Amino acid sequence: MSEAAKKMFQPNPESYGPQTPKLMNLLEEAKAAQSDADSSEPRLIGWEVVKMGPYRFIGKSFYGRMGKSSEFCAAAVRLEWVFEALDKMAEYATEDAYDAALVHWEKWDEKNKLMGYTVGRFMKAETPVPEDMDYIDIPEILTAKLFIHGKSENDAIDMLRAEFERGGIYKETWQFEGEIFTSRDARLHIETSARIYGAYLPCELVNPVAWASSTKCSNSHLVRPAPPQE
Image 1 (cartoon, rainbow, N blue to C red):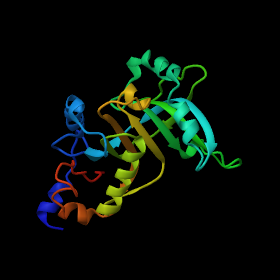
Image 2: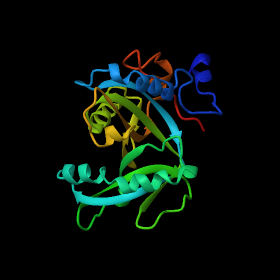
Image 3: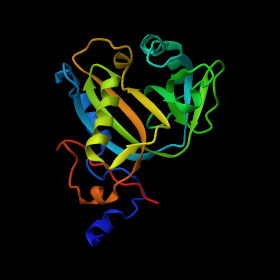
Image 4: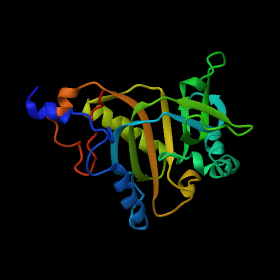
């Protein structure tokens, strides 16, 4: 590997994400321009790969059969009491404390072949769990985060997986699938000029040579994901 490429793999003590522009900066800009966006087609805001956690995802779990989950998932995200309870726990919030829905292997019911769907938020590790709520402990993990203007959280998941396939640099490791709602309107699918959705997918670097030789992602407005550091 060239000296220039080696320098690209030097540890960054603050973040395992890109130096500039930060995905969160792009997200804030997108929110500010939200009223001017056309939501007829999904439009990418940006994506990055960073280490996140350790977290405790707190919320409420529901179960349904694979392939027939759309109705109970839509009902689950409308449970306002879950998010109202988490609103009262602001001292435990994280930078990723969006309203979210998590599909996690820990909630897979093998005996009955049921998928667990947990609605809630990523909170700090060891956060006390309110009565009648569920939790999933998530260790520090390399995660791809993507945000879009669009009509559905599924568009964000599909777009992120397409980036994995197109780039060949990272691959999904399937610990969980996170659907991110950046506003109540997005979570309830209230019709507005644009809604911002996100996708969080754990992943691993599988082609460091391709990462080192690339100068940008497949689209010029994407954040360039950085490699994990030891």
